[in-house]
Image 1 (cartoon, each protein chain N blue to C red):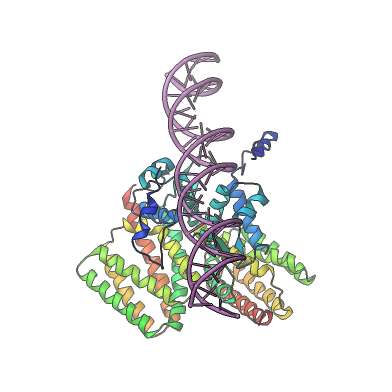
Image 2 (tube, rainbow over the protein chains, first blue to last red; image 1 turned 30 degrees about the horizontal axis):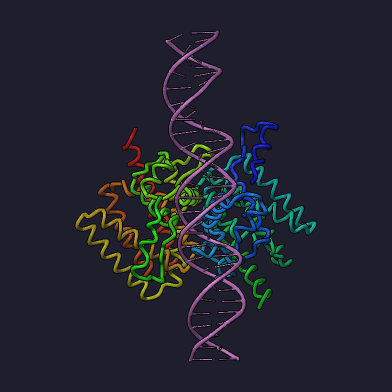
Length: 232
Length: 232
DNA sequence: ATATTGACAATTGCATGCAATTTCATACCG
DNA sequence: CGGTATGAAATTGCATGCAATTGTCAATAT
């Protein structure tokens, strides 16, 4: 049907990431579809339709689906297709608990290994986040916020920790995507970030770990309170 | 070539888990191959060979491979096949750090939610483990030990935690598989388990969390010390 | 009117075939 | 003799086709 994929590369050679492997591209695109909510929780994942949409055959699509299932984003029902895992408030709370433990560990490790450059980058993100908070730019705030947490995890120097964190973080990102913060909680979160940065600068791992756990617990509480008001 | 798969089911109906989906069976079998060391770390994963061995075509095998890659057991090199992820001492140490944090959280949660039945089961496993330790039956000890840790994680009541724990645990199981404990470390580990059980019975979550972190840190240290003597 | 059965349509699971890339060996050149 | 080009064989990636299962709906029976 289509072998025009070979029509793309001859333009310019990119030795770094050719990314010509279709099932990997599909993996990312499908992830986006789920995170952005186009494939909502509980929705079926129709192979045929997605094949037509992305103009690929079922083989690479099915391979991407298996990977998504292993990541926990979808579930495979034998002979009955795939469904996007429904993000219940309980599942989100459970995930945030685990993420809290991971971030606590990350904070502790980061305090031991943090370089000046890494700290500087985190400080930069922090103040950028403060700016977005001052302007009430929620989306930009989210991005800066996420960047800080990811930077701390990365600064832990533990690749397994980072991978696990990214996976769990990705699972609930779609919930956070649609989450509108309460103004009071927003201010509180920013205050918590202030104490986080202080603990990090003081290299106080124990304290930072405690703060991050608390920070995540509070986020979980705020989310569940919001969920209670959503669809009763 | 082969459509004898349809010759198996008509005997008896098992409504629970027919498990007739080949790519899932393959997933388990390939996991076993890796854990048991037949596919050692760094080894290539030849599609054709495995297809012949399991008498299936490449399609379901490749699907299983994608899932294994998402689980972190193998890595996919575009156009160059798959390799079993090499378990360096550093990677094991990193994984144990994360597992330690997860078990600490599990212990804390378990202390809050533990039922009498669950505690009883853990106690039973504990004493069984003591028996195996007394008889110096390393393999049986490992199994009882693993059962205790899994039971504590399960008692946390956090499905995400359990899934994450199982994944990471599975990645390094093959390392533990070949690990021969030092006698002194073995005795020490058993002593740590005594304190774990006491903390669990006292519902002292903070204390249990600390013990489990320490327990894993010690295991990590023992493993790295052994690895240093392995292949210089 | 509801429940059961039957057939048909749609979807899933797997095997196979072909194009493209990599790999290995051999020959060639410096 | 070391390094590089060149070809074929092997391997990977993807598309397609077919068997099998599931879902749907209408006809019949209760």
